[in-house]
Image (cartoon, rainbow, N blue to C red; front, side):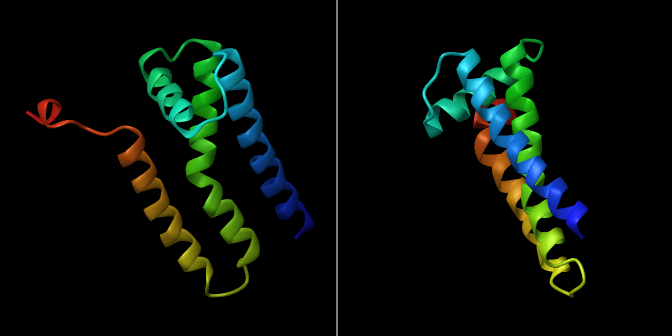
Length: 106
């Protein structure tokens, strides 16, 4: 069980470290609009070092509720809730970070 908590803490630390390094490489302050704009720029230019940091941050951020939920509720029936919350979290995070405009749908 200690190994599972260690992995969860490491993934959380790695998530925030990638966020810090990604924003630092782009010389941006830690604000939500800067994080979202940096993520959108990372998709457009994925080979830059700052983009790699931000994309790693985003992927870990999507799965962070799954890591924490399964580490806390592994031996109970609440692990189903952790999976469902992660699915809803990931869907909404992707939908609101990378919105599709009406012109792009057509």
